[in-house]
Length: 247
Image (tube, rainbow, N blue to C red; front, top):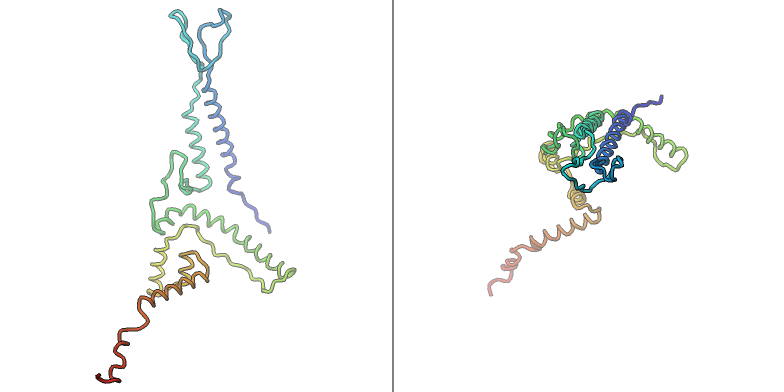
């Protein structure tokens, strides 16, 4: 039976529409205020028609009315506050903290997310988004595994596959960056100070090289060790002293 759900964007489409309307309205207000209509003395010699212009200075006498600009109270502060509220609503409805992307937009930022360094603290900080990811992952896990298994069956039936199809199992990760030093210390404790990785694999990961380059590095390290230790020890100069006797 096919399962359907509501996407994350579908729930906040109306909020996106409101954000777009507010941005358009703010842009229109700022555009209108860039060159407002001016009023003042009749410049056409008593025609009575109003004059519109912008960015000009009108000389007037003491008997003339003072020129002014026709503007309205557009409430820009309220418009920006509403925009801030709408943006915050998007993050709230999507269950995503703003600092997750490394920056914040709204006034109520909720922190930056960079005050924790160890893995446990980071996981505690990311608990809301990790819970959401785990919930969404539950809906995708079965579908992805079914698709992979069906692909194996098709290849086995109509292709040249030389393996037996098996139902896959996916090991999902939370995506949080791991502290390599912290992970190494944990493995050291769990294994009783025993090595958990061979030298060749360590060189491959650290230097990002292939097997051949890693083996070449290991060979050079062995050569350096031999050069430091020497090929013979000091006792070779005392060998044979008793064979020839005193001369």
